[in-house]
Image (tube, rainbow, N blue to C red; front, side):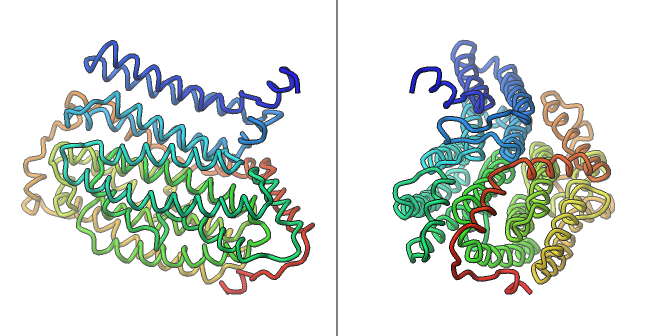
Length: 521
């Protein structure tokens, strides 16, 4: 292979968005070294600009002729473009909500941003990886950066405890996942590309026990990243103890990368055991929907309530993965897009409240409407959207998920999701009721001391900009849902990976599989 052929095979343009983020990391570190903390805010805006530039380069890749890069290690197909865009956008909004928060704690903002961008690069590469080594390196890049972000408040015991728990459980999860893909590598005869692994396994006439063990270990690693029950133990403690901007990124960026990994790895490498892994994910979805929504009812902390809400939301998204149709994948993408808007908006409201009161207890929100009606309105919109109240974006996200599941025959799963969705409305509306219904004499001590001029305080502008953007997106994405749905539909139709898996299933020898939809019925 000559040099020109090598350049063509590498096709480095596929990772141009990630290169832009890496250059942004270097720019942040160099600027911080030269200018110091006095330029923290301009450095933060520079990082946001880099992320927006990366998103712009993703748009230009939508109709690229050859999406395969680095000798088949990555694929910049339309589905990966949407996932990478979600991760980059969540990082940009997280930086906006971090500026005032990190400044108030007295820690270094530039270092925080550099670590956050490193996690972003890992998540973006994970969303497009089509080869085992690339998958694991990307996963660990994102995971290690997330551990550091969780414990960034070094003088806060809760942050240290959260980071330690996250690190220990995450290390075990990574080891289990690595063992699973190592078994997959051996069973496929030494292949590392997902499509080659699928072809190698399809040529075998009998499924081996090793393949099923590999599948279980891989699912365990994925379930940890998306906070699916019973691999959710880290989520409440990490959400409560971590800096709130970090929690926001983990709940959206990390979760999106986890679902991108689930689709790419399971659909491409394990098409012949689809009955087995859909059965397992059905059980995970059942548990996540029930435990996430029921336990959230008893929470007294906003961050812990949103943690269990995140677990439940993962259960809703898993419905699209389980049914495995184009409509299912489309509804997954749409739901994750709107979840980004409403969840980040909710966390910005939590930050704005905690910056002025120093607490995140739900009871302390009592009577907030009388002191800050605008913040009350924004938080109410985000929470009601998470609960699926029309005409907000969350309602249409759930409708599309439920309709795709019903069309595929997953009646039992859809009915459970409907019931638990009704349960979720209670704990979301409880917060809204706490803020709005309470009379002035019933205001909490935190709200009594709450300044009426909160929105005019210096340093709050980035938070306010981020909140307005997220609330507008949450409101308008419901009313004008068609463009986002069309985008998701086109990305699924134009992603060869999904259709290649179907071809392999048809052409492979007949094997014993469990029809999961019969079990759901």
